[in-house]
Image 1 (cartoon, rainbow, N blue to C red):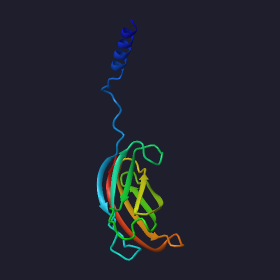
Image 2: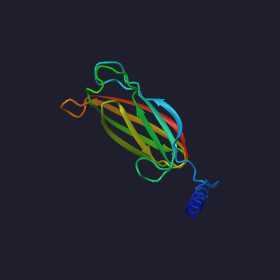
Image 3: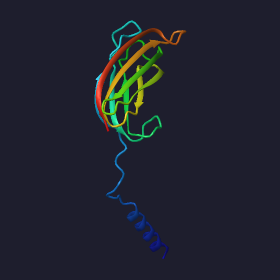
Image 4: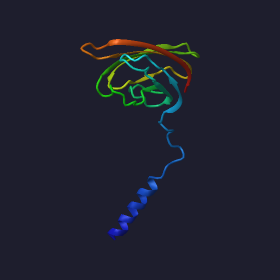
Length: 161
């Protein structure tokens, strides 16, 4: 009798757990493109090659504000150079955005301190074509928060949805 009741409960749980056709759409970000925002190196050495990945349609952005949003992720490829994990970089990134359909505009500033040149930013421009302008200043922490700052800019247009 107990085995039969357990089998009925398992079967009921299995039936109740089947997915529905009206499931919620995916909350995963949608990759749009990668742009290059290279910068001079504040240390002696070659330029810092910095790819910035752009994602749109993010329903639950990392800043906690309601979506949809555009997220920008910059991540310097690991080069294994002599300064890796020895120096600390200070990065100030300023993203100026303008929705070309609605005219809305804004600025997002992200200060970052890390051993590699990486940063993340989220903008909330609404739907439509959006012009993004990125200005980043990269320096080294050496008894001062920003030694030998190097500034670079790049821009692109993406379609937010």
